[in-house]
Image (cartoon, rainbow over all chains, first blue to last red; front, side, top):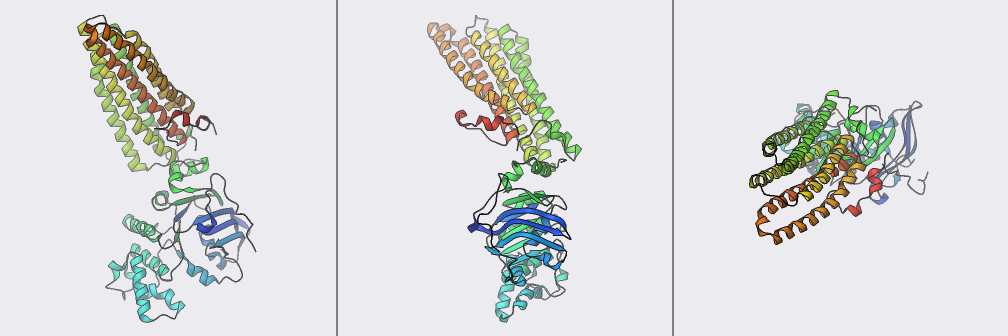
Length: 270
Length: 242
């Protein structure tokens, strides 16, 4: 299966990026749950080392789109799709793609922190153990690095053997991010990562998201528009399974080009 | 994206709606007061009415108080609602507009003070024809700028932006003729200087009306045309309806 010779962007309301600087290229992506369409004709490119936010009302398809990026829908037999999702130029649905390797490259963080019922250290080391072949010392190094990167190290360095459940909600979410980072992903998908957290923990997660973009690409789904405005470089607005507008966050929140976007971000009736 | 004056009546939160409407209404009230200040300052001068001039001078306090009140409400809306897009631009435009209206109020009170000096001196004052002419011009600009704000009318706003150039020209030529009066008659220097200051104040009122018109374009179109050469402004884009 090959991509059409030219990527089909881009109306005035959908920003385009060169293929060379894009991490994901999504082309004509449609997705249905048991025949019921959830996404229609989504074409967009996600730039590398930037934070891109997907926003939109409940049921607009933003989480569905996010999950499509590391094939989480594979687990549901009812889901069918069309179109292409390219990660660094490679079709993620190609038969030679190993899904577990795809999910290592494209990590996922969910709304409710889901640490495993084991120690803080073992949570972060979990993915590394699955990969195997690491010395104890190397593993220690990577766990420490990941906890640093997730801005959690100082809070847990003296109790790495304690249960992950002993951490607060915000700490648990940062632990889950550390667990994702440990396997050195290229992309981190965040599905409402702060919506179950208090405001201070939320700010810490947002700060973390910003600090991580030098190392990887981040894609954030949020129903909190202020959060998208605060942390993202680019924002895509989805409605009824379609991509409505995709623009630099500064532009989208001060002067969107379409009435539908304006109505949504200012809280007006359609 | 383009907005129209009824855009602000569709908020899901009616309370927010009312807050934005209130900002606009208060700005218009302040605009009306400032318009009246300019008009009465000129009337006091032309009719030699010192009581009216004093009234204008004293009422500047009310203008200042209105600026503080409206700015305060803008701050509250920003803090509590975190407005976006056209709502954000409305709040910013109102904050900027109150600053210009307050300055226009200052110019009106400056005119009133100079008028009082002239009335007290009781001389036959020269240059009042020019004052009358330019004051009619800038008052029309101010009124149009406020109307453009109330109606989100970019066409009218652009007209005001262009008017400002011709006010500047008229101001230049009035100043030149006043200089000749001073050269002809040294006893006239004092009163002519007062008239010059009045003309200067009127010219500044025109500049502030021009600013107000620019905020209307920012508010409606999201384009900031401040400091832009009028020749560079893409008028089609600014007046095109969606």
